[in-house]
Image 1 (cartoon, helix red, strand yellow):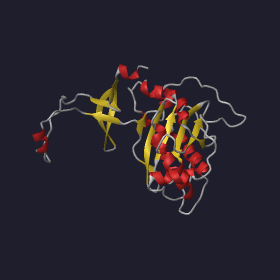
Image 2: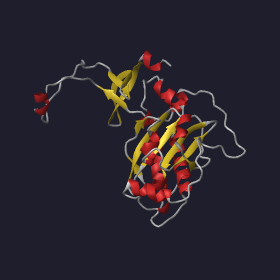
Image 3: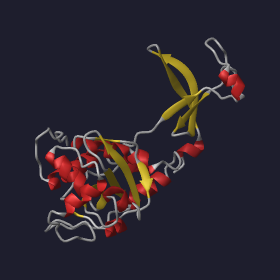
Image 4: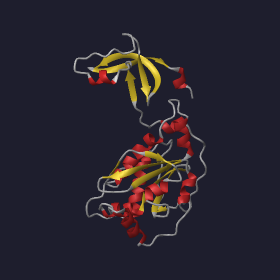
Length: 278
């Protein structure tokens, strides 16, 4: 779902901004089923009890603040037990944070993983500052987006967030705040049951860095500083030897270097057994 970025002078309710950002994140969050955002609600520190991992990223552009995403055990376990090795949670969640920020008319920096006990303070500025949580649900609650009240208010008004974090929190707490809840609430008339544990299918849309390596060598610093155009480096691999195919730094296959429409390519000749083991 594509949500238009707020224009200067435009105004949306903060809850609408939060839900739209969560829906945007849900479209690219690793999941084996479509995720929906049933609604926004005030958050408390107890919300982290439903989840197994937390990732945050600093907002940029016209907004200041931090976005956070909580994810359930399924995704954390799938990344840790991937056949390609232990994959990083921040890399898997980065597209979701990018999408959420874009829906708010902003951008985010590099995602980073934080402890569940630290994510609320990272997003809200302190453990008792107001923030909003939007659960993302399929058969069960799979994730949640966290965003501070000052950041939401600024995004809703189409204006930058206050430069001072203290002033931002003070401005937010002057408005009436609904009673806090300890966990994301289920919409009336709808229930969620624990879904079966899922594995590798959660990772089907996760972007991976694929590298083809011809060989390696070691050099003294003085030799590196002496490099110039035309210098030839001798690698630790004989001519005609297969090149290595690495995914996120893990060796999974070998093959022959070929040329495809004037670009280099790799014809895979061998899949390493350890890379296909589940």
